[in-house]
Length: 84
Image (cartoon, rainbow, N blue to C red; front, side):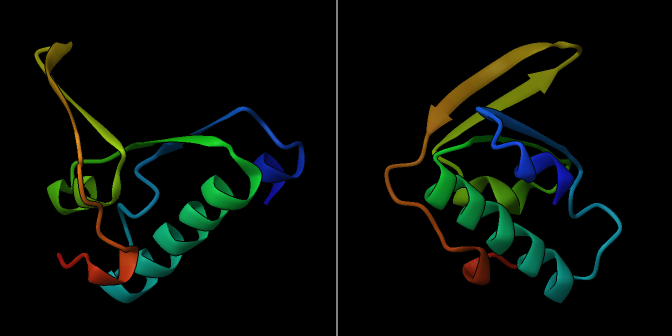
């Protein structure tokens, strides 16, 4: 809430669902999507959960500290459609 209160241009989220069960993780992803849509904030989500990439506009994969691939999602899933 503090991070969003200042209406940042970019919101960096490091493993926001890392220690959460799937139900709570989906709630967090829905909140991030709402912030992104309603405030126009660019949201960067760093995660090891490959399923989360399906909700993103753009996905950047890293390997050995460098960009390994970049792709966009033509169709995106809603957080509630993601399973892990």
